[in-house]
Image (tube, rainbow, N blue to C red):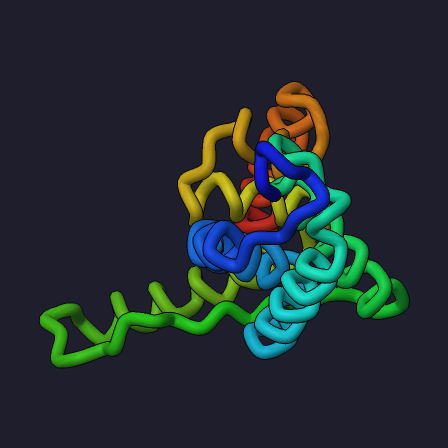
Length: 170
């Protein structure tokens, strides 16, 4: 990770790299598995594996290498199970002025949306949530997933089509 000496692992550079990428990597894995604690474990394992191989990392490819490690760990962990996402609302619900009917409709819609998101393919769900939740641009998603921008466009387009169809049918 040191530009002057690729075989050298600098703790400060690694620490900065960790601080800059750990949240994004956690979100990436969480979108894939839907389990916050499991995502945290996989992120930790990914950085440990990254550190043990940092002398082999080409400086410009460090982020891609890290995400490849994380994705491979995820695939090893979840290759046999179907993923069902249960996103938790992070905002506390305080007193509200909405009517009970509105709150019920909102709750029903949220349940439909969560089910529709869970029914997306892993590839669609990951690209869609990275764009909509993390605010990543298609180019950034393509770099992280190591795919073309056109592939990202297609995944998000197909996710939107699927979400619209599923929400209308529920």
